[in-house]
Length: 143
Image (cartoon, rainbow, N blue to C red):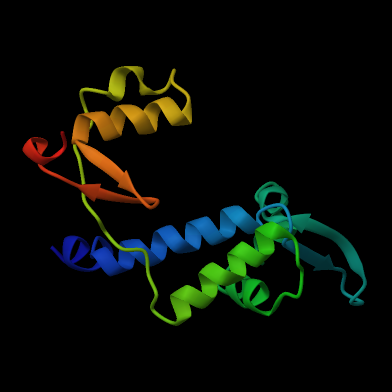
């Protein structure tokens, strides 16, 4: 189907994940300004606050990427968001390194810490962490 060929394509998903990460990094620092009919600023809202403010929510469109790209805010979140937008523009996208079905873990994952979840997934999938990147190795080579 069209959906499988286009919307779930690995490059489309990589951009989607990078945009999501950029917005998550900028969620508290990027402010959406709402003005009255005279051009006076009525309020400024973060991305998170804008979801509950219809007058600000209407500005959450593709122009947010331009706001991120052109921002001079040096907060860590905004810097990271700009770096991700830069990477998207230069096609330096996230790389797919593998997939694993973790349905046997699903029942108890929600009660675990992030570190415990990572360790359980790594153990089940026979992943070794090598310099910060996951490298899949067959069970016979993981000793």
